[in-house]
Amino acid sequence: MNEEDTKQALRYFHDVSLMLYYPKVINVFFIDSKPILEILSQLLALTYVTKIDAIALITDEPLPLKITNNLKEGFFNEDIFECLKSKSVVFSLPEFQLCDLIRLLLHLNIITKLEDEPKGHYFIPYALPSYNDLVSIKEANAKPLLIVWREEKNKEILPVPTGLFPLTIVHLLNLKEYVTEIPPSTPEYYKFRDAMSLKVVFKGKEDTLHLINCYTHIEVYFTGPTQHCPLVRKLLTKAIDNSSDAMHLKHNYVNAFACPSKRSSCYCIVRPREDGNIVNCTICPVSATISSDHWYWFESGPVENDNGTQMKHNNNQSPDESLLLVKKPGTDDLMKLFIDSAAHYMIIGIGLSVNVTDLTPLPHLTILNLIQVFQRWSDSNNDVTWAKILKVCQDFPNQLGKAEAKINKFLLSPEARDKY
Ligand SMILES: [Zn+2]
Image 1 (cartoon, rainbow, N blue to C red):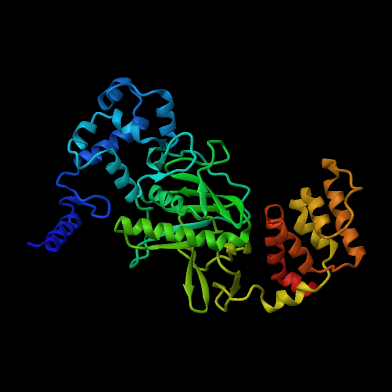
Image 2 (image 1 turned 30 degrees about the vertical axis):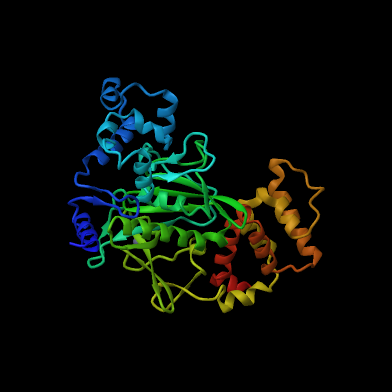
């Protein structure tokens, strides 16, 4: 047997799980995978096991509380393995030592290396506690995107594959160009095995991506400007594809939205077609209309075809909407559309180039101030169009993204078509 034959045979034995062989990492093979799995499970047990006598079974001596607490947040340093009882077995041969284990775990994306994190050189999401509370994310302008796993043939909805979520988090963290850091452990952010927030940077602006594993889907929220949502979706798709490949899984997941009919197990699946995207509900006989604040995740918004199924069209606005954009908005419509964003009357006024310095900043005057702003804009005769107010919303997506979505929806409505 020559060298190449031997390697091929080893790869075969690895593929059929008779041994472990990672030639890209280390030139040894493991006939028995137990010691490696054991030292990993002992590491994770440090965060799950609370009984002192049980801890004594896995460590040589009690670990300082700080080290255990950091591990509960997913952070650790390489020397933590030195404290585990199974080290004597796994590191019994000079060919496989601590640095090799770390390289192997990095290669398998079980851990990721961190820069400038005082709590540890490495991050392991598997060590985090699980999330058992309700999800409440208000600051995202785009409605959440859902990633749903589905049997290809009979279309049955499947659970999110076990282990895929933390693996995807590590893959995302390895996209260091965009995903910069793990947020602090404060209530605004999720840091759990099945719910995680990550800091994402596009064009120098840092925003937050929240990912929640909801058993039959992963829910995705992005707090940054809505124009970056398609890029976020692409990054996430790449990370899920990489994780699926590593786990030898099919890529049988689809993008979806929560069905507005609010049936418990109903998803509005977005299906790409050559002429646009179609929305199909998994249960409802007629798929519901998906509002425009969902479509930020795709390059443009939906149109309706003859049978009421929503499709994504390739231009930003339908012809009707473009015609309306040059019309002068009525103050009554503006008030309806901006009433929930009234607190931002200063921003709106500045965007519309009207004087706001004399408006009294008292909470009970907010609505009156907003009326003033729109009245002054209307009187100014300075580009008083739907296009202008939409532009202001786009310039301040964090504050006015919701209002923008409402305007887009309104301009597509028969009411708007009749009136303008
Ligand atoms: Zn439905």
